[in-house]
Image (cartoon, rainbow, N blue to C red):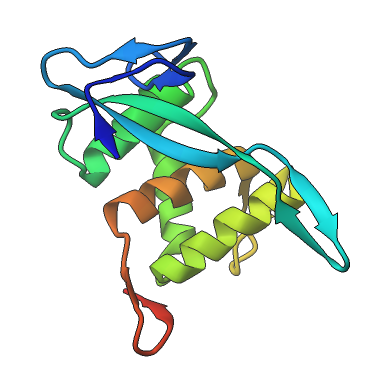
Length: 156
């Protein structure tokens, strides 16, 4: 739910800080989420055991969600001192062309799960996994696709 203030742990997204509490100012809001506090094994499955609430203090206005803005955020904020340039981002975009939003999601999951150093494209070019992960997440933000419940599929 959306709130004006939260007295528990809260991530201030703009400041990139974890705070003990937060109050929304002008143009801001707090979104509250319940997260699993831990997991307990029940026979052959792991089930959430307990929950805790976490707030996210976000702005209601900001940059338009365009690919150009995503590239700026990738190079300026995510990798400010990194060795990557716009041409590196475009090389990853070229390697990922033709993938659907569902494929971006799958790629993101595999990079997070297996933690590779590099990712190889079908053409044989290799790119740093951290850059591929960031670009895939950016592409998914700009082109999210949608879930169609009737067919139980994620489509673009």
